[in-house]
Length: 411
Ligand code: ADP
Ligand code: ASP
Ligand code: MG
Image (cartoon, rainbow, N blue to C red; front, side, top):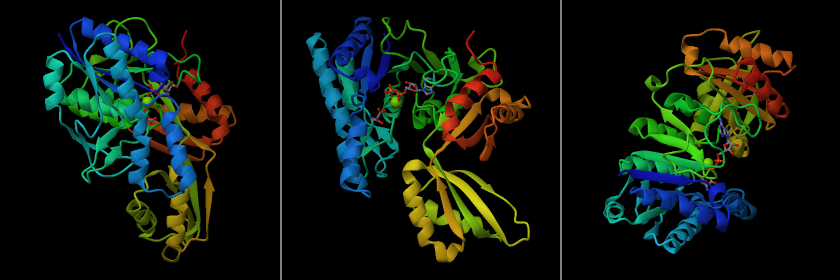
């Protein structure tokens, strides 16, 4: 007998039939003798709709109220799944984030989990009751409902698995595992049977939506065995070959590049005519940091005559307007000539732990993009990834060409 956490994403609970299907997946694990806690997302499209409602009322809404609104999607599915389980004769009850509670900090709309109180559900799991937990939401230190950022139910599931010391955390979704790149864009993408925590972390943080970045971080820190698998396949979680996220030692043969990710969520900002002297970068990025705006890629050129230069960087598309406001407010201090913004960009990243020991990975990326006539606007690298910013219209072309160039295509 094992203790298992199962998480079902938006498409998997997208309508009543699918919720009934999920109930049968839970039933299968219960019948196999396992203790089961389930984490659910909102029905697909619901969170987007709730976010849109907030935006329709205000451009700069109160994040605490935003959380009160968007957390409601998961409340609905947790209740519905509990009913579906009861219909199958399985004792079950729903749990909202505040009821456990799933404690978070009070950074609304992107709260971090501080701890999960599992005392009560452990007692009930031992009695054979299934806990259906609303994902994505928690209870802030300010006593209010928080949410964990888009895709956050993955993180709720891993946090719960860690707190319950679960044997496995099965993330059921609409694809049957983690692929070399998004299988919806590159049909030749290959399913990976295993991927390292580190690579998964890079894939997620560079845009692969299949797992939320923080969920991977948490799985890595707490050594949670995460499996990504399809909710539409017939078999039970322990029998389906999904993708396991594992330690590097568990992977026998390591490819140099194991995956390619892309993100359309970033926007580019260029400050033209910035003084080229010590303290300028600090002056620009200080106010952004104070406004909790994350900056990702940065390039700065040296100036030809030692006086003026340009500075280009990226921020989340959703924060583009706020970034512009902050920079304009700080204009007197920063003394730049003008601001240019571009939201039609995509960041494409190639990822692989093998990069540590192999050279030429970046070169192959640049050459491949050049052959397709794609201009690279910004480049960043880390130990196990190379990222480039290109025009958004080339997303598909770049992904397919790179996928082939690194030998990742399915035979
Ligand atoms: P859920 O609603 O179940 O949380 P998501 O939409 O968040 O599902 O994540 C699954 C989606 O992630 C897939 O439908 C797929 O289009 C996308 N995706 C992006 N990159 C990858 C990848 N490398 N492997 C698998 N899926 C990927
Ligand atoms: N429903 C939330 C979202 O769409 C959380 C999730 O699905 O993981 O972002
Ligand atoms: Mg998701």
